[in-house]
Image 1: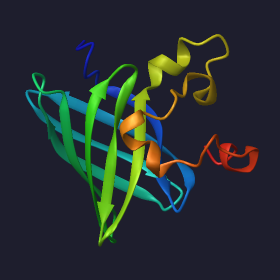
Image 2: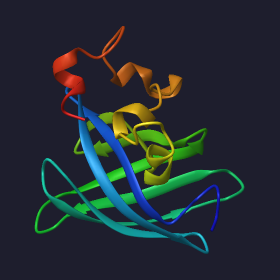
Image 3: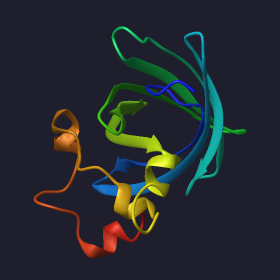
Image 4: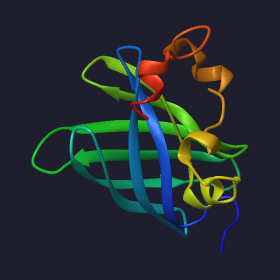
Length: 138
């Protein structure tokens, strides 16, 4: 298994209008290609993209079935991948991490394994911290 880009289940969130929205993904990383699927509060989606082991950059498109497509660009660092998404002039931050990282925590919950927002995407997050109501959405 590739320690930097492990295929399998991933958890995370994207930020839109100051709120974090949970997403669950099943990703396959192989020879620079990224494929997968997942779901979030909007619905089911497919993932198609690429990754670069030397630069640690990851770029993909998240296509909601029968609907719109969102462009993602991020970097592998620390516990996961962080970056930004873009759709028709809108932009926000995101973070995802391997599901096995969540399982490795004492209670195994996504909330316990959630890393702090990466400094490069901090402007997309509420300051100084998320309210309890927003955290429950993740």
